Length: 475
Image (cartoon, rainbow, N blue to C red; front, top):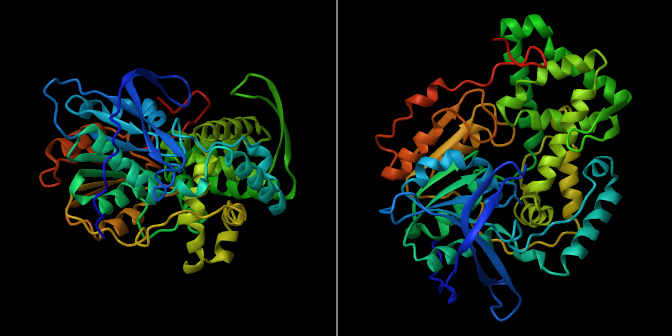
């Protein structure tokens, strides 16, 4: 269903110089920033207003193309401006001839962020009642400045088009990562006349309700990494049967957590952790997100089997802090509790099979628990319907993605008449850092077509070699 014409906001966006900073506070990039005021509840324009934060990185070429690239972050809950600051190099070729526009989706970054303070490590050990109590506390805290029901994808795509109109662009190009692919697909559905070309990276098919498949996909990704080690002579000789090591550690940690005293890699302070099965599951899952992290898995599993759990504990703290700092949990909840969890009853959920994975039922049950008290927001009735479009679409997948495997892209592609799907074997979640991917994306956006797109250079992409010692891979 095509969206009805919406009046553009009357307020123009005034930009001033600003800086963008990545989540790790390593990269600082110059940009120009402004805000656009919109109604929190689109159906009540006289009600509370919120300000959308917009950053624009101007094209280098003075004779730039008229259609910019809008970047949509994942999560849900990550801000586009934060994501771009950490990945700008991948978009440098596109930025030569096009503006790059970053709209912090409502509820993230500087767009009335729905952030709540949590002790993530404590939450891992929480009972269902404790999870529900923490969720209620978060909701009460956020209700002081937001009605959390209006922070869903169905509302966000309207914001996106308001920004497009306010900036005077007739058509835009879109890059969406992970959850951002859902936003890009729904924008393509709602505003097809304003979309020129779309890149979907780590694809969530419109029909998908995220959650029930996560544990199974994570287990498959881990097994594939460990099999790759077994098939590699140097890795197999150094670490033996890494899959058996993984299973042995799972069993031992399930029976008894291990007390670990270590130096917190994020603060340098002395720390203590009773490292148990949920800590282990967190490291295993997030370590398969990138081939760089996966490259260390056989090594740190081997060290733990020998009694040295310090690397596992350090990885757990580092990963939890990294992901915890970039996600606005309230916005995440508003999306998941409206767009995913209510549809679990429609899924064929094999709970017995999920329970056998390293994640088990923990993630699935946690999402269901937190959504018991979280209000649902506006949901377009066709959000989970197939998107049918003739707009050119480039789909990118990692062959070993633990959360959005290539099957999601293939399902999404069914209704995309002009599309091409690139799968990079052995890679994880998100393909921006893959060799030559910046050239492929720039070529696609430049021509606005999949016909004639040269993707041959991506065939040489290989996952990072395994670390055979803390010093790194073999020379």
